Length: 144
Image 1 (cartoon, helix red, strand yellow):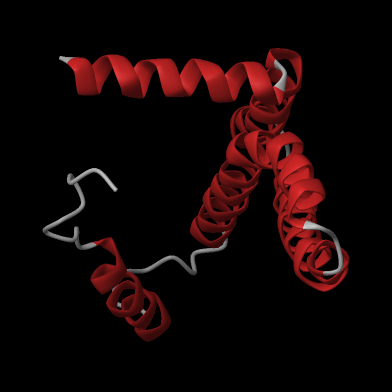
Image 2 (cartoon, helix red, strand yellow):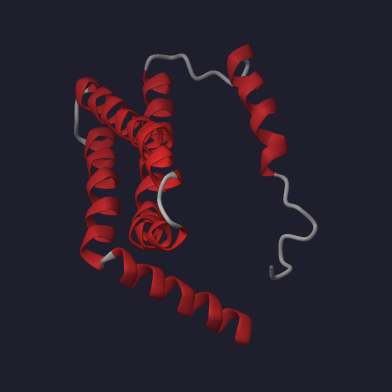
C-alpha cells in the first residue's frame, strides 16, 4: 500500500516538475500526428511523421551526448544537479513518446509497403536482438 502511494506520488511530482502543459504537448502532439497519419493521412504524411519523430529523437539524443554532456562535465556538481532537475522530468515524457511514434510509424510504413513480414530475416533478427532485453531482472521489484 505504501509502495503504491509512493509510486503515485512520485509520478505527480515528476509531472509538476516537467510542467503539465509541456507534458501534454510532448505526448499528445506526436501521438496525435501519428494517429492522424495512420487513420486519415496519405503515405506521405505517415512518412513525414516517421522522419520528423526520428529526427527529433536522434537529434535530442545526440545533442545531449555531444553538447550537453561535456558542458555538464565542466560544471560544479550543485549547478549540474540544477540542470538535471529541470531537464530530466521533461525528458521522462518526451523521449519515450518520440521513440514510440518513430517505431510505430516505421512499422506501419513497412507494413503498408509489404515489407513487414514475420518471415523476413531482418525482422526475425531484430526480434532476437530485442527479446533478451525484454526479460525482467529477478531483483527489479526491490527498492534501491
